[in-house]
Amino acid sequence: MDSAELAKLCAKLSISDVDGPIRQVSGEIKSEGLKDVDHCLVGKVLAGKRVNREAFKKVIEQLWSPIGSVEIEAVGDNTFMFFFPSLEVRSLIWSRGPWHFDRNLIVLEKPTGTGDISKLSFHMVEFWVQIHNLPLMCMNRRMARYLAEQIGTVVELPTDSRECWGRFIRVKVRIDISKPLLRCLRLNLDDSGEVTTAILLYERLPEFCYACGIIGHGLRDCPDDDARLEALEGVSTKYGSWLRAASVEQSKNRNSRNEKKPDDIPPSSYQENQTAKNSDTNRQSEQYSIDHERTQQLLTALVPVSNTTEDDNRGLKLGLLAGSTPNPS
Ligand SMILES: [Zn+2]
Image (cartoon, rainbow, N blue to C red; front, top):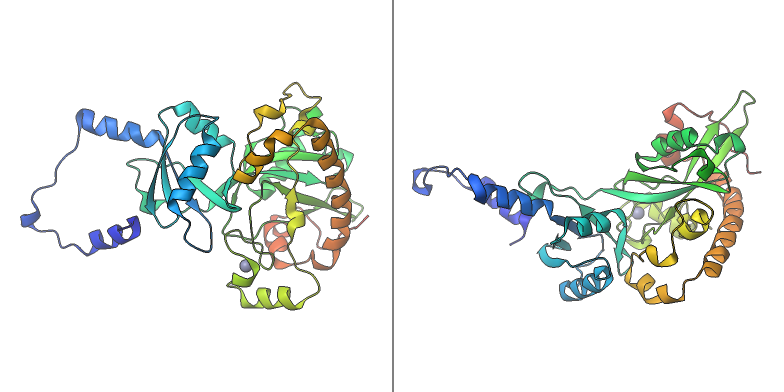
């Protein structure tokens, strides 16, 4: 019986004297239980089908073993409890996400209070987002914060303005994945009326729907009939693999005081783990330049579709932009 079925059953129970009085849990039993909650994460795999539990446990144990030990138990359909003997390991696993299983996103939640799994919604995820095509006036920490706030809840920002110099800014934001991915921010930066289109690319982006832009299902399984038909019959889709940014932590941080060696960055999926040994600085540089070229192509591709409701709802209506055609140059 999974947690949802249990919750339904509890709601149906007609409590009477035969079930006895309410038992007050206190003292060490209570504090030990609450302490255990702090050592747990609960994760849901957003896959269209039921994942093989044993395969999942094996892959995740292998993937996380370089960071520390974890015990994994299935607690529902595609939902797993992770117990970490070390709080530090739990914190590292949390901060180094998002994690994937078989290209599907594992949405992690930190249980709170008594750790009621049925109350977890699994719809908020932290992503590193690269903001491309920014003019010089946007390359400072204050602007990075402002832009990050338009995307989601700010988790991490460049430590100083110097880290914002370059081809793009990286920010870590917590976003609501029940909504379409935001593809760009259109900015009215001065009084000229010219609109700057800032392109958003997501690092470690898992499988998502190219028709509606939501993570958790593929194009052919899209519940939005209009979006699905439009994508299947049209010449191009509104969303695509171009929303995936190459992970360029090493390149971006190469000259910063927070420089990290390639081994410090853990792969977040099984596939990445298998190829991690081949990663080196040269490869990262190559990804970096390809990424820049793709961004330029992307600006052109966005023009016919950048007035969509999704972008309007999550960008334009924030009151920062003028609603004119974005400048593709
Ligand atoms: Zn869809």
